[in-house]
Image (tube, rainbow, N blue to C red):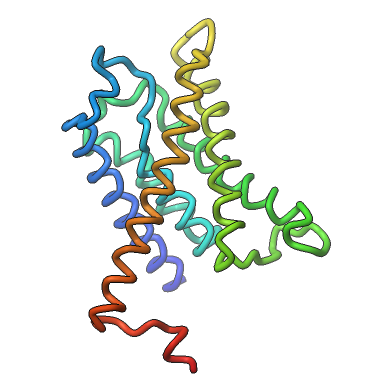
Amino acid sequence: MLHAIKVTITVYVFSMFCYSVWYFLQVLDIANMNPNDEWVGSLCYLPHGARVLMFCFFRYYSLPGLYLAEITGPALIHHNDYMDGWSTAAVASLFSVVAAVELVKWTRATPGFFSFFKEVNFENYKFLYLVIIVSSLLNGLLVNSILSVINSINSISVITVFRFAVGDFLGAIAVIAALWIIFRTLVDTRLIVDPRIEDK
């Protein structure tokens, strides 16, 4: 129980940090990617990186913290960036990551029989990138389908789905790249010890 609480707090804080950084970059709109201020999705959605990393490394323990961040992040940061029904669509966002991880386990990428409890070694980055690609595509389709039903939109914009998929992919890659740079800098300055070196 204590482990689950610690994971929930860690996941929530990290996810909210990603929301905060993402929203700051959205407000600046450095690349002026959305001049008409339309609801078409971010081209670098950092919170998806939190979803993928936290679920891949903390598994099902991370879901309460992720969902809490999904419903409080938009409300605390800027709810106008989100359409009605986001709390429902957030379930689809998390499902897209869970489904992507389970699909990676089910494929030949991880040999053996399918099992929801089988571990995947995400130290091999090709599995992590595969999860990012699959979850980005699933998220773009599922979330926009749910939001279109809730908001009574007759058709789903292909541009919006595409921007969701690309934004989730680039956002997750950006989070991983930032963490890698931070980790390497800390190791190079000897503020932390690389566990691989310590084991030798």
